[in-house]
Structures are given as C-alpha cells and as structure tokens.
Length: 460
Image (tube, rainbow, N blue to C red):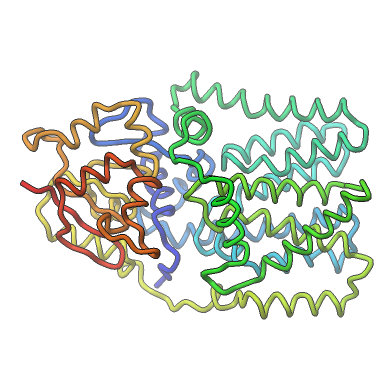
C-alpha cells in the first residue's frame, strides 16, 4: 500500500519517458501518428527512473524513495554551504529546517519533481566555488552541466551568483574562465547528443522554451501577480515562504544600499529574478519556487547570524511551523492503493470502452490503459505538431484514415469555463492551441466525466 496522493501527469511524463528509454527510444527526431515525442524534461530528470524496478505505476514507490533522497541531499548540501559561508556548526542547519517549512519544498518532495535533483547539483557547484581550489572552476562547471541536463533552468541561479561573486571580488579573469568553462561543459555534451547520437534535444527543450515557445508568455502584471500568489500560497492558506522572502528581500535592499554583497546575497537575488522569469510560463507551479525557498532561508540565516541566538532561531522556526503546518502535507494524507489512484480508475473506464485510436493528455492514464497514440508531454504536443502538420492532419482527418482519432481523454472539460477549471482557456492558450479547442467544440462531445479526466468522442 502506497499513497497515490500528489501523483500527477508530470510523474506520468517521467514514467513514460523512462519506459521509452528502457525500449531504446531516446529523443527521436521523427514524429509519427503513434508517437509524438515532445517535452521540456531533460535526460537526467527521467533516466534514473529507467533503472528502478517495476513498470508503469509499479515504479512509483521506488520513485518516492529516490526523490526523498534527492530532497534530503539538497537540504544537507544547503547546510554545508551555510557552514562554508561562516555559520557555526549548530546554526548551519537552520536554513534547511526553515526551508522545509515551506510549500515549495514539500511540494517538490511529495509531487516527485525534478527540482531537488537539479538543485543539489547546483549546490555542489557552489561548494566547489567556495573551496577556491585549483580545479574549483572546472568542478563547478561540470556540476552545472549535470544540473542543466536535469532541468533547463537549474544552472541559472548558481551560475549567475558564482560569476557575480567572482566579479565583485575583482577577479574578472576567473569570472570569465568560469562562464566559458560552464558554457563549454553544457555545449559539448549537448552537441554530442544532438548531432553525434541523433537525439532531438534542441526541439525538446530549448526551442520549446526559448526559440519558439510552446506557450504564450504571461504579461508583466500577470507574471508578477501569479508569482506573488504562489509565494503567499493563496490557495493553500500556508504562509511559510512569505516571511522568509520578505526578510531576504529587505536584507538585500540594505546590502545593496551599502554596496556590500557576497555569495549569499547573489544567490538570493538570482533566485528572485529566476522565479519571476519562470512564472512567465503559464504552466509554472510551486516547484519553480523551490530554490527561492532554499536561498531565501540561507540568506536570512547568514545575514542574521550575529543576532539569531538559539532561542530566537527556535522562535522563528515555531512561527514558520504555525504558518505553514508542513506536517499536514508530510504525514497528513491517508494511504491509498495505487490501483485506486485517479489515473488507474480512468484507465479501467477506458478499458470498458471499444478500442479505438485515443489521444490521452495524462501519460499515467496512457501507461495504465495502453492506449495509442503515445503522447509524451501533452503540454507541448501541438507545439511540436506546428512543425510537422502531417501527423495533426492524420489525427483529425477523415474517419476512414486508420490513424484518425476517435477518442480524446483530457484532464479538464474543454466546454467548462469556471475560475477553478477554465477549460477553454487551458486548451486554447496554455495547452494545445485555439484551433484544437475550436475542433473540439465543433466535432466532439463528452461521453464520460470523472474527477480526474473528461472523455470525448468524435461526432459521426
């Protein structure tokens, strides 16, 4: 018995990518009516899961253990960074404990996201930089390369912070060497995979994120509002990150006015900027605030080290515990068998229907129901199909075409339009595109609806 709480379509993407990797499918260049391989996720985000026992949902218990290890290692390395920045042995654990009392850290741990693995690799780079050894620049660059191949945005905060720290200490030559080494450490393996092994990493990630964005970016006001809303956890009524963020921001203002900045300041500053940039993507969630929670806690602990007696540090911890109540998420949910997970229930419902070409948005349902076509990442499938319209034409062409879709399974009802479940906005702007939503309205109807999915079939 293992809890299926927090199991989401993102975990399904990891599982499907790992399952395809086990079969030798790794970022293929060609799209086909049976497999549309398009995703933001980088190889080290899902490749470790291919080594885990089991298949499909059976991998989830081992995934939880691995993600728990990643999160614990991340907090351990944060304490090591705090110690290198001058905190006493007893005090160096404060940033980790404080950060654990915030929604982003608990969310990434329980929802099994790739952020902890990417962040601890970035923290290794920071530790290498702090050692100031002969090979520290090379080691830091290699760690940031591994972080990049885990999550595209992972190197941004540590890379910018290290470069600025070197430059601010008047070591401009070292800053240039570090940036050059990091760029080379990322570009060389990327080129080898892209052109040497024929993997389509460019379209699966960089093009979707930077060159031809899969989603229409939010405006400045919308970005700021949504980022602030998640920082104050508006929907969860948990405020653990808010005091840490406000305190860190206030301390940064003081430090900037005095023009006295060190690595802790640069890490916090870069984390704020990176969080805002991440929220330009309309699909951003709490996991994009993970490193912000860590580096705000680190910054506050370092800057207030002289004032924070053990009693005051304990009082701060009690305030965070009262505001965020992390135990409700960490130990609150009751165990639920994976066989009763929402995706498994929808898969059983699909099994009771005639077998026809079925487009499924949630890979968890695809895996359990063994449907075709396989779509790795529903959020970017139509961004890929804009570059290859032949598959799209086959999917929505005459029903006489053997690849024509007969059934579509979505996470939301595309006809329902409420603030909580904005179907038309989701499928016309965030996922897929306006043409897709127009097609649904004109030619499809809902045949079944559950709390986890909406099943549509094509009108005759």
